[in-house]
Amino acid sequence: MDNGNNLNNQPYENCAVYNGGAGGPEITQKENYILGILGALLFSLGGVVVYFGLFQLDFISGISGWIMFILARFGYGIFTKTAKKITVASMITAIIVTVIMIFVAEYVSVTFYMFTEFKDLGVTLLEAFKAMPGFLAEPVVIKAFLRDLGFAYLFGALGILGNVLNFIKQKKAEKAIENNAE
Image 1 (cartoon, rainbow, N blue to C red):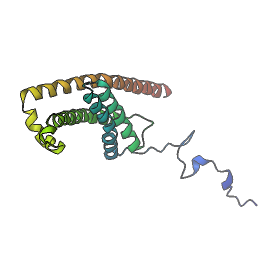
Image 2 (cartoon, helix red, strand yellow):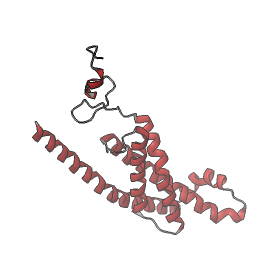
Image 3 (cartoon, one colour):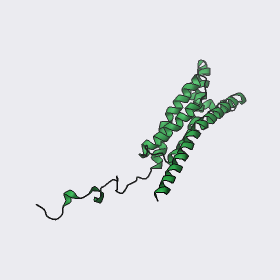
């Protein structure tokens, strides 16, 4: 029985709930930057663990900075539901979070080192954290701290630079394709 509505043959793109696809309108979600920052911070902790582990082996490696960056960018994408598309915001957030977390990783690593040196004297890990600013006031400690931090930033930056350059190339290629389509 045909009542003239013919709803069964109506194409999907004319429906109000259509969510994009071939020939239809694309609905894009706005990034939630606060959730992205939270995701970047949480995921970058994996890189902090790698840094800490390598520090315990007396090894400072740029790979841990690069790992922090990749995990921060991934965490940003997961929390903002943009994991399949790298955005400018995800790149900037990942870089800033990586810079912060490399410092945190170095600080925690040196604090733990100080704890292991003085635990025989009854110093607890919490006391070592509280005493860390005093340790850093010592010229020998601050010199070693800044040297290790500098190497971590340098090698981390080299690892991140490749990702940033690839991102820029990708954006230029997308722009060129977009311009050719017009």
